Amino acid sequence: MITDELKPCPFCGGESFIRADESHSTAFFVGCSDWDCFGNMMWDETEAEARRKWNTRAESAEVTAIREQNARMVEALRFYAGSIRVAAGNDGGWRAAEVLAEIEKEAGDAP
Image (tube, rainbow, N blue to C red; front, top):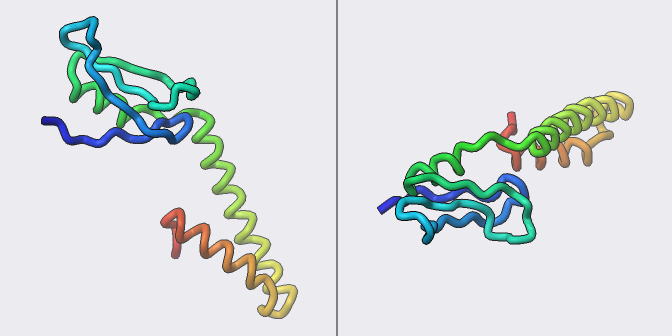
């Protein structure tokens, strides 16, 4: 029995599914459970290979762009938090520093 869990849909983050293709003797479909999502559905001849391909697919260009944008926003927040602290005699910018710490903690980037 195969126990590898499927990763969420790379397009909408929804739950994924895998099922045997009843029209073929050895084929398995894997895709997004949300039928409103236009994410890709893929198939392979074995369940193990279908799972492997779904779980190792390339990240979409949109997700990559969002990750890059988030990284730039965190860098800007670092800069402004530091600038405010300096301008206010190290007493200002405390909220920006708190938000930055929360973001880094959530992302696993905390120093």
